[in-house]
Image 1 (tube, helix red, strand yellow):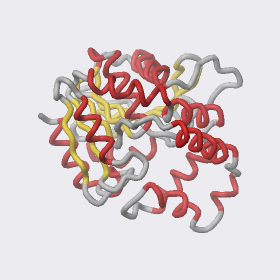
Image 2: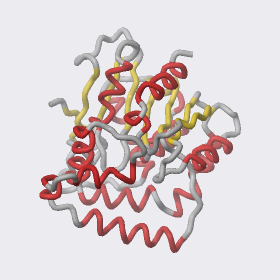
Image 3: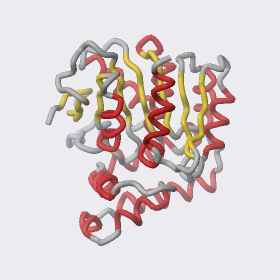
Length: 279
């Protein structure tokens, strides 16, 4: 499996459809969400491989990008955006397009404003802004900490656990192999990264800064929401788009999907993404 060092952490990556890439197509980089990994993007990348060299990677502390015993980096979303910049440097890539999901989409939004010269176009899948509520956030953090602490590996062997685990994230069925992969990724995420990003992605700081980040975006961007997304409701995506001062962010809500529209309704998701990328 290919790895590359990024700020002291070996990051797993893969190219789709070819490794090494052809070099004669533009590059589309994929970012996953919280406690996930690059592998849930594989089917989307394969479908777009005729037009792009697709680069998938596991962010620090997730999937196969394991943390070393001593890590000096924090888990701020801005730090992950800087990770991406270094990753692109190490891969020898000056300019790419992005497709990022959930927490990865927040990281991508920060990246767009810090490194706009490095991006052609960006897709933010299931992203948005939210209002700070101290009581709700405190409760969420306490619950999240318990969830991260109690992750025995034997959960993966319980019949139907993958279905139970994914129920809140989906409106439509996805293949059982995908559900099991999501559960496996959650169970293997490093404790420090999983807990640290809960505190930084759902925080007063994020609630206060992300509206301004969306307002500043100047890179052609598409934001795709799932109609029934319980994690990042579609209205949060609409509000984020409305904040954009240059009106350069397009918005699409994919009907009858939830937090994983790229898997729940792949044909329509791919149609929307292709139309945006091939303008």
